[in-house]
Image (cartoon, rainbow, N blue to C red; front, side):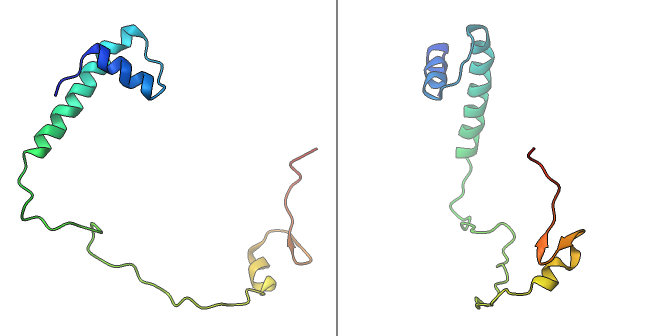
Length: 95
């Protein structure tokens, strides 16, 4: 499949991308190169390749889904640079 200037102009219009006329030649070449690369990939025989859900082949460790109260302000604020009572103190950002 090969694209021409009119097709690239229409693709740019549909994608709402403003492509100046002098940039169409470069974009035609780039898009035709991408399509040629995809066509080369389509020639590969992948009949014996098993589909992957994860490239590493490992499952992520899952923790137990348990409800905690989360009411541990002292531990949460232990690393705060300037806690005030049980709140984080932050610099004023709005005048």
